[in-house]
Amino acid sequence: MVDVILGLQWGDEGKGKIVDYFAPGYDIVARFQGGPNAGHTLYVKDKKIVLHQIPSGIFHEDKINLIGNGVVLDPVILRKECETVKPFVSDYRKNLFISKRAHVILPTHRALDKASELAKGNEKIGSTLKGIGPAYMDKTGRNGIRVGDLLDKNFTSHYIKLRLKHQKLLDSMHFGEDISDWEEEFLEAVEFMRQFKIVNGEYFINDNLSKGKKVLAEGAQGSMLDVDFGTFPFVTSSNTISAGVCSGLGVAPQKIKEVMGVTKAYCTRVGGGPFPTELFDETGEELRKIGQEFGATTGRPRRCGWIDLVALRFACMVNGVTQLIMTKADVLDKFEKLDVCTEYEINGEKTKEVPFQLSRIEIKPQLKSFKGWNRDITATKSSDQLPEEMKTYVNFINDYLGVQVRYISNGPGRDQLVKIK
Image (cartoon, rainbow, N blue to C red):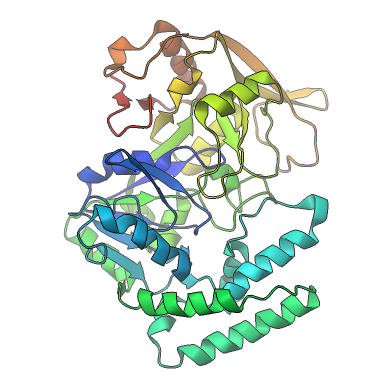
């Protein structure tokens, strides 16, 4: 049985804490897509930890953690992550497995990412410049190097061949930055990565499933950044929705049971691209300030706005969400009035559907207002103790989406998660 936890907005929904919370109930935690552009924030022994590629179950030493084939993996960042994890676990290598079929991010992928973004000028998509897009392009172009290739005696020749191809592209883009230091660091990290348990991930996970093991699949980014269903072209390079679990881990659709969608009680987005409910006023600034809305990977200020139920219902539909988890509800504690977007107005017509192309049209969000609870909920332990105004807010969202909020996060701590009865 495979359960899934994924984001329903533009990423940064707080999935790391949620995976960490649910991990004790599973035998395996597996990342199924994305790369080091993801940043999953957890608090371990009151210390803030940000994971980029390692599954969020790594701090539970009795759990197996698998980096699946759908991930693009940067050995340099993996090595740095391991140094971060090391003080909190006795042996991170013991329970961390890597799929042979996962693709590797090379230094030249990072250079190509930077060169491509610079060339776009005012049409930048907001890339994190981690080499994610170029690595996925090599994957679909059938040129990439995979983790299993690191064990091949001819790895060096494979690497040089791909590097030379990339260099020709960089020369054509007039990218003159010296990346020799990147390459030295990369080759050292490759040696480090060879020490891990590198496995046929699809056999590994299915063998465990056949033995009755429970798997928690962890997504990165968010559904509105999905390469097919997100706000294209301002999207990531992988399938962030639940369908990506099957291709990113090698499991069949009938193995998936619960799809737990994570949404903030409001909306945020990092980087460029459409954001219908974005606030440019003092309210938006207040959301950012109270919510400490800065990218876990980039540190960039997040754009903030009210919750977008049109986009959220779309995300629930394409994912087959079975239950919702609402995070950062406590950020709304001091607001006297809350708005939710229930429709889009486009060219004078109202719709509850997400358009094919959002970046070439003007969307006027149609808002419904609610009275805020204007009360500190961070110490709340039971759903019975939640303010009536909050229950009204959440119940409206439940009815609109046709999916129930089952948990509400009311603070960053591991124990700050209220189960809704």
